[in-house]
Image (cartoon, rainbow over the protein chains, first blue to last red):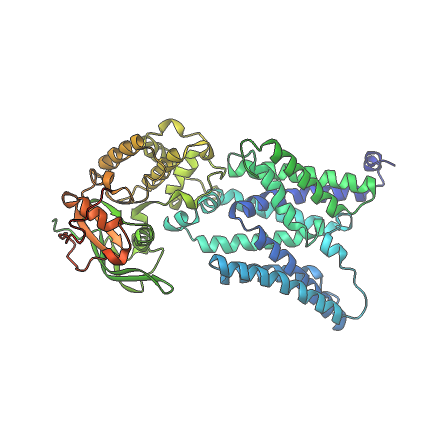
Length: 279
Length: 266
C-alpha cells in the first residue's frame, strides 16, 4: 500500500500519530533552533545531546541492577542534559574554556553511557537512542512534546523583546541592566529539555542537525527573529513529514532520512540565495 | 572648571589582561558637558578604558567613579555604542527593533512583556536625530556600514543617556558623513556629556573640546595644543620610544619634542 492510502486507513492510527509527533516537534525544533543559531550555540546543543547517553546508560544500569522498575531512561536523559547545560553555562565562560567544556561533556557523557551499558547484564540496542526512530514514539512522548511546545511558545512570547536584545547584542543588553546570565541559564535549560524530548525523533547524534538546518534555512529569508522562528518551524515540518513519507515508502530509517531532507532543503535554497548571502 | 562633581573620575588605575599590562597609572576626570575624544594606537587601551568606565572590566588597582557611584550602578545613565565588528550584520532584526533595545530595561513586567508606549516615539526621535528617520521599517541587514553605525548611535540615544560613550563612531563612515556625524554630536553635546574613541585625530580635533591620549598611559590635551608633534607622539613608532616620561594633572600638559629636527610628514 502506498503512504497516503495507509494514512487514510482507519486502522493506521499509528502512522497518524507519528505524523503528529513530527509536526509538534517541528514547533520546538524551529523555535529553539532559531535561538541556537542566533546565539551560535549549536555545538553546545550537540554536547548536551551526546551527554544524554550517559544519563540513559546510568538509568538502565540502576534499573537492572537494583530492580527499580519505576525508573525511566527519560529521567536520566533529562538529568544528564540539564547537568551538562549547567556545567557548560556556568564554567564555560570565555571562548577557550567553553570549547573545552563542550568537548569534555560531549565525550565523557557518551563514554559513561557505554560504560554503564557494559556493566549492565543483558544486551541493549542503543541504535534507536543514537539515531532516533520516530515510528517508536509513544503517546506519552507525544504529550510531553506538546507540553514542551506550550512552554516554549509562552516563554518566547513573554520574553520576545528580551531574547531579541540578548541574541543581537548580549553586552548591550547587560549594560541596560538585564539579567543576561540568568536568561542564558534559563534558555540553556529549555534547550536541554527540548534536546531530550526531540532525541526520540532523530536521535542523539543528529538532533543538532534539526536544531540548525531548518533555522539556518529560515535565516536566509527572515527579517525578524519571530519570522525566522515561524519559517524554521515550517522548514522543519517539511523535512520531518517528507522524511516520514520517504522512510515509509522506501523502508529506510526515519531519522537519517529526515536529516538528509533538512540538509537538501538548506543547501539547495542557500545555493539559490548565494548571490545575496554567503553560506 | 565647574564646581560640580566630575561625571567620570578615575584614580590610580591599573589594568592588565593576564600578564599584559594595558593601562598604567591612569588618572582622568571628565566634567559634565565635556565633548572629549580618546585617541591612540591600536592596542593602546582605548576600548579597554571605555569598558572599564562601563564596568564590563574590573581594574586590578585603582578606582573608577561614574556619576559619583560605581560603573555598574551608573550604567543606566550611559548610552553606549560598541564597535560594529562584534555584531552579526545579517541578524534578522528591523532598524526600529535595534533602536528599541535602548529601552529594553523598561520593557513591561506584565504578561505581554512589551515596550512602554512612549518607547516608540523615543526611538523614532533618536533615529531622526542621526538622520535616519525614514529607515525605521528597514531591515538592519539591508543598511550600509555607515548607516548601521548611525542606527547604533540612535540605540544609545534611545536609552536617554546623560553620558554618551561611542567606540569608533567614524570607522565605517565616508568623510562627508563623518562631518555630519560630528555636527550631530556637537548638537547632542548641549544635552549630554560625550566621550568617543577615534583613531582619526586630525579630524576629531576640530570638533572636540579635549583629546585624551591613551597609549598604556593616559594624557589629556586641550585641543588647542594638538599639533604635529603630539600626533606623532601618539602614533609614531614603537610605544616604548614615545612613552611620556612625565605625568601631569587632568587639566593638560605640555610636550617635550623628542623628534625635533627630524620631523616627518604624517
